[in-house]
Image 1 (cartoon, rainbow, N blue to C red):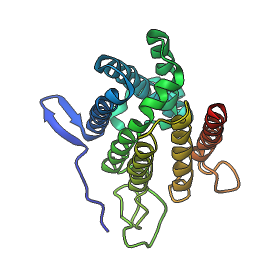
Image 2 (spheres, rainbow, N blue to C red; image 1 turned 135 degrees about the vertical axis):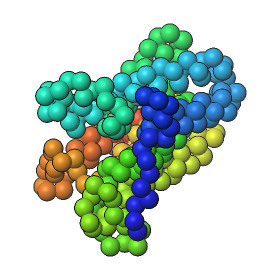
Image 3 (cartoon, rainbow, N blue to C red; image 1 turned 45 degrees about the horizontal axis):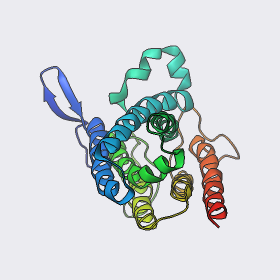
Image 4 (cartoon, one colour; image 1 turned 90 degrees about the vertical axis):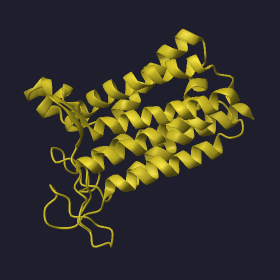
Length: 257
């Protein structure tokens, strides 16, 4: 299949350019806001609390995601030119960095509202995959983060990926980390669960899906494979999520029992 080349600029208004990558984040936040309003009545949250949490979370995602990418995946370039940190329109956002930013935002929101940390994270966890879905679609539009050379029928020739067809790993992640993880978490949280269990399942689910997709995704050029010629930075960062997800889930049920 030939990659459907899409202009990364969705709209130009004189010198102002609106990029699809940025719009995907906007769509993700709007989707999370709508789902949050749906969940608010069920969990006794006010509309104002949902909006405040998403506002803090959005700041955590953007700042943490960009800083995380620059540190985890592009540190040499950051040292060479610190202004690269602000070039968000070029892509380059780390989920793991964004997660750290969101966790810090949760801590701030917890102190402000008096809600427990896991009450907050359990509430918002099922909404996160929607943002992940749109973020990976943004990666696909940018023609970045493509996978290894493959002969599967849906392999694509990417503009910057050479003449050979490759796994569209961005779409794999959109489906697994986005749509499938959303379905799992939404179904699992439909009925009350022990405090921390939904958060644990999110960490376990994302960490597992990301770890698996890394097997067919080209590692970042500046690092390559870090261990045994197949372990990538994404897998190293995902392993703690899997361990913590298992720990939080088991601990939640033990404390509830």
